[in-house]
Amino acid sequence: MENAGKVRLRYAPSPTGPQHIGGIRTALFNYLFVKKHGGTFVFRSEDTDQTRFVPGAEEYIVDSLQWAGITIDEGIHVGGPYGPYRQSERKDMYRQYAEQLVKDGHAYYAFDTPAELEEMRERMSSQGNPSPAYDHITRQYMKNSLSLSQDETEKRLASGDAYVIRLKMPRNEELKFEDLIRGWVVFNTSQLDDKVLFKSDGMPTYHLANVVDDHLMHITHVVRGEEWLPSAPTHIMLYRSLGWEDTMPRFAHLPLVLKPEGNGKLSKRDGDRLGFPIYTLNWENPLTGEKISGLAERGFLPEAYMNFLALLGWHPGGDKEVMTPEELVESFSLDRVGKSGARFDPEKAKWINQQHIKMKTGAELAELLAPTLEAAGVSAEPAFVAAACELMKDRAVFIPDLYEQGKFLFGDDLEYDEKTVAKKWKKENAGLFENLRERLFLLEQFSESELERTVHDFMEDKGLKAGEVMPVLRLALAGGLQGPPVSAMMALLGKESCDNRLKKGFQLFNTLI
RNA sequence: GGCCCGUUCGUCUAGGGGUUAGGACGCAAGAUUUUCAUUCUUGAAACACGAGUUCGAUUCUCGUACGGGCUACCA
Image (tube, rainbow, N blue to C red; front, side, top):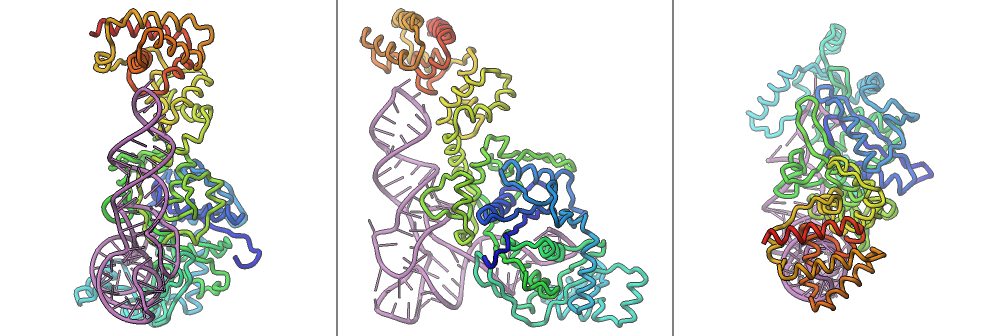
């Protein structure tokens, strides 16, 4: 980048509800770029639309970022030299810039009522205009300070008539900018409309607020979703009109996250519909009671989440796809971000989570599993849980799987798969298995290697094959045919528990047949 | 409709004027494993179409088609 100026990026969502992975991915790309360049990550709330305010949404977003490991350097809850960071609290700053634009001839007052605007659009479309717009032609016929006499304008202003301030888009100018991801993008102002900058309720629109704030907060790069590309020329026009063009941030418009199937960008309902969450955390809308489920609660690891999200539209360059957050930062670069929309693939998300679970130690997993165990009413020694997790981790896709698929490790009350018992248990071998149980009971060292040796010796003595012995042991120990290696399982369970299970199991098997 | 953006295996993508077009998920087969999972090996699977430029286009240019975004006093 040019100069020694430190890189400053912002993530500036609108608190209108929880943000799905599309929004968090935008935050992530901003974050990765910041970390890569040793810059500052600013969090700002764009709450200029009071009608869409949803209580709790801002906290939800902050919590999501925190969970994901995206740390806010400056902004809401953190503070910083350019606050406040909530646009509603900056309300008073915007008016002066809007007025300044009017004074300089770059903007104008407009008095049209919503009904009049509606009427204009209807009239134009009935005349065959497919895209009615308040533009350099239309404004001549509307009620604004350009079409009205100065007296009339002043009279309306003085009498407190409702008005907005609109950007006076030039008639025919080429407007181009170099997007960091897309290269040169060209627009002609003749196609652009006179966007409202300042609303009649005294609030700025996104267009004004975002430009003013980015300038005041010394933002160097704006990394946002592709849905903003069409309004980029309006923003550039604003920087120009405000005289800030020489410090204008660079723009990078990210490809969108698309639905897993069907068409269009990912949206709210796609999550629960597909049985796979697309939000970070659980959420209940306080206004509607609507509930959505989160990836965190489902058992997704934050680092896996970042890894997966980063891969949606960005490519690290090499063949290595499973990466730690540090590795992500290290190899991140905007010019390895693709241009086309990326479809969200739940299967790959699962796989990446599984890979990250495998990278963790048993103790780390035990800690993550604690809420699941607690909810299930299971209490166990931390060391035991850690060992159990170590044993189960190759089988888990989500954290709770560690327990769900290994329930038999956490309690002696087993559910037996009777069909399989019927298949594997031979009554005539009952005595033999009793003998094996006794041999195991006599073991001084109940370790994996000792157990393994004992069982093997036993099979040799009795001329039995592994296929005749191991499944039966497993059935008595775990109730079913799935799980970690038998000897490892026994070593973990300990002599007493194993002996109980075998005794009880063999007895039960006889009655089942 | 208009404006803007895009288009390599089903999905995420690498590549880039001359390649057997590479990897990953998923899928299939096999090996390992008492089982499941893991792991390993192998396989099927793609440059949207048409022109042009060129000795040569998947790669460059232009069209077409298709997909997406925007088109509010929402962000």
